[in-house]
Image (cartoon, rainbow, N blue to C red):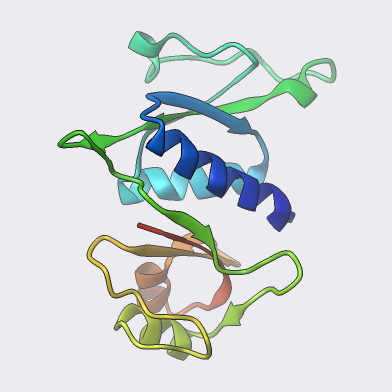
Amino acid sequence: MSLVHLSNVCSHLQNASKARLGLTSVPSSNMILRLTLALQTSGFLSTVARGGLTPPPFDALSTYVPEPVTQENISTRRLWLGLKYWNNEPVLSQMSMVSKPTKRIWMDVEGLGRIVRGREAGFVKGLTKPGECMFISTDRGILEARECVERKVGGMLLCRVL
């Protein structure tokens, strides 16, 4: 699991939403796919589609079937993400990493409960702004912090999204 690639995706999504792009692509990996699907479930992204170097047709994005993965095209696989906007403002305005490649931060259920309630846990600030989410890599996949508290699982803090 490479946090360097994940931090590049975080900055790319933040820049793409500030540039008002409707569709953008990021490199395809299992971890990035799980994070983007969690972002879509939380309402930050409209669509997530696998594809190649050329974007899928925008009008048929929900029914798009990508070409099969082969040894020849595996290095060019991309995830095509549809960004959301509300009242001419991007839904995803800030996205920053919590764990760094040189310092990974792990949190148990009690610490995550403090963060969800808006308090500090260790040196990680709590979720205080409305709509703010934190995504955690657990043994059950990538989950949002509130979902981790409900399921009573801890894990590595990945990123904070507002």
